[in-house]
Structures are given as C-alpha cells and as structure tokens.
Image (cartoon, rainbow, N blue to C red):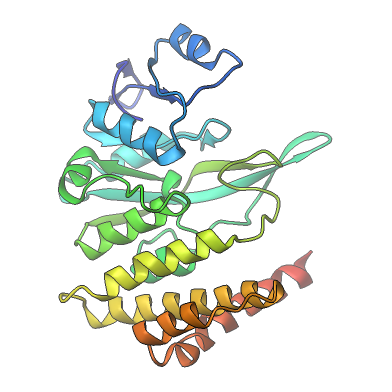
Length: 282
C-alpha cells in the first residue's frame, strides 16, 4: 500500500511501502522492516481486513495493492502514477498477466487478463476484475468507503463495481502493471480453482443490493442483470452437481430478476466461446 516509507524514483514520484501482516510465521515482518517498509501486525486478520487496516494507515495520495506472492509489472508505478497525473482521474488500471510455476521457474501467460484494460461495470463483473492492476486515489477510498467485509471472497469486485456506480473517473493503461503468481497455495489465483458456493452467493448478494439502487443508468442495470443471471445459473449448476438444488435460492433469483434465464444466454455463450478458444489454442 502506498504510504509509510518515502522512496524517490527516477520518474520523480515518491512511494512508500506499508505491509500488513496477518500472522506469518516465517519472519516476513522482520524482512519487510529491514527494507524500510512500515509494518503493521494484525494476526488473524482476513485479506480484506488487512487491506482496510492498510488503507486506514496509508499516507500517500495514490494507492496500489500488492499481494504477498505476486509482483508488479516492469515500471508499473511509473505508468500508473503518470496516468493519475490528470487530477480528474481517480483510478487507473493496466493489464494483468499470470505466472505459472514450472520446473524451470516461473512462466508468463495471458490467462486471467482482460483483452481491454478499460474499466466498465460490465467488464468488472463479467471479466477478471484485476484490482491489483489498478492504482487509485486515496480520496476515492474516502469518497466511496473501504472494502466491504460482508464479502470475504469477492470484496475486491464489489469495491470496483461500487466505484464505477458512484461515478469514479477511470483510465486504461496498455501496459502490464501486475503479475499474479498461480500456484497451489495461492489465496488469490490458483491452478484452475473451482468457484465455490460462497463466492457465487456473494456475487448474487451484492448484485441484488446494487439492483435496488434508484439511480441506476440503463447500461449499468443491463450489466448487473447479465451478471446476476450468469451467477444464478452458476449457483444452480453447482447445486445440481451436489444434488442440493435450493428452491429458496432459485426463488430469490426469480424475485430479483424474473427473466434471469434469458439474461444468462449472452454471458454463458461468451464463457463457452472463450473456453473453446483456449482449447483450440493449447
């Protein structure tokens, strides 16, 4: 998180490094402090609790998030801060890539990266959110609030969607600003991790909350309905796999959007097309 240690970079900006440690046992706080980073120890905290602690203590004007096992892209801070030189821009997002662990080391791939780093509500909901590829103003956090701990898995997607619904001014960067590392122990991205019931239920919960907003634009409502439909179908398929189809939850989906099966056609077709493309290219 930006804030804490001030460090001068060649492009004229100063950056600080703040580490929130949730109770590591391999000496991470000591290693971080040895580099000059400011460390806050918060044993037992979840990932979004830790992020909120860091946000509350960050001293910089711009903020970006770096997970413990990932890395920033080359010159990422320079590219992102340059985009935020325009005082009207509140959030910039670059491209994200993924590194997979192989015998010979880490190998870069493009899976998980949106083809277009532009931010729209539809892209945040229906494509990888990639919040770590973003840099945003501290004033945006003050304006829309921190990460919602009611969504322990998907608070990042909810926060980005909330920012866009609240009119955040954004800009894309056609540079790789973040590299996720996919491995078996990864908390944020793994080797084809299956979606969980909780993850899908969180998506449905915050989408239904947004759909109740009286100020929704037509395009935002359409994006929310498409995402709600996709996740309703996703939840039903996960339940059918376990022979646990819930009439109550199915009813909640119809209550929120009576035509959700129709709205699901487009997003599901897009998912199928992407999978076919990956299958033929591999």
